[in-house]
Image (cartoon, rainbow, N blue to C red; front, side):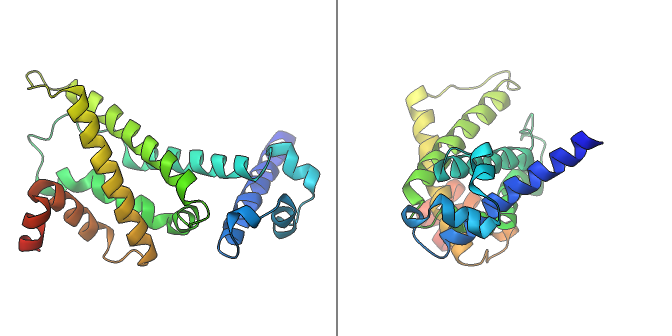
Amino acid sequence: MLQNKHDIRTQRTHQQIRDALIDLIFEKHFDNITVGDITNRAMINRSTFYRYYKDKYDVVLKIFEDAMEKMKKDLGLPKSSLKYLNEEQRSDPWVKLFEHFAENSRLYLAMMDDSCNIWFISRLRSYIISMFREREKLRSSFIVSKEECSPEIQEMAFLFTANALIGTIDWWVKSKCTPNSEKMSYLFRSYFKNGYVGMLNKN
């Protein structure tokens, strides 16, 4: 019972610290935020902060790691095969991905702020590429006969998709997540299926 209460208090403290940092990012440049600013906003003392985090960069890192873990959980495992899926089922992972960003839009707005932009986006890009890699490897394991593309082409495809997705998400969360997740999923998939000119002509 005592352990449960301690765990709840610890979780609450973590959330207070992270919420405080996110609030402050909307108010001032990340470089100008101090540990004192964070502890004052979270209404905790500095010793409590340092019990859990080394510095403000450590807080951002933990926020990022938790966000990526949640993204992975929200997406679920890739389908074993796309062959027998209808269009709605095929688009489902993309809808879930955009729903994840919509549900956590305040977090991504803060993390994609100019003061955190380079650091966060670099790690977000790396994570998305590794996620694509993992999902493609798992999906490919279900395919008996498949024409292989070179590792260089595959990595280029992952990089193009990750950069396009990050740019789209940055614009979308700043646009208050309109259009909705389903429409964004359709538009994003349409771009990669039909290309730039095809998307403009079709939509």
